[in-house]
Image (cartoon, rainbow, N blue to C red; front, side, top):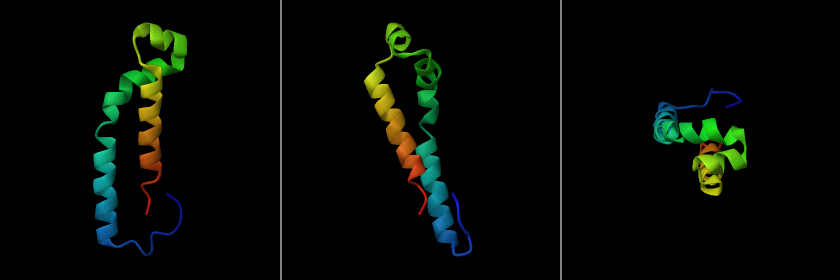
Length: 70
């Protein structure tokens, strides 16, 4: 986040913290994908990772976490 926090109210801070917790909770489920996908698509597919869904879910969660700021 960038910018001033001068106008942040406790309600906004609690909402941001709660949303962060909810969105960060499933990230450990993506640990396997994050370790295997850098090896390349062929290797990941050979290990049994469904490439397109894995990349799609990672982009969705990255987008949600990036767009979290109010």
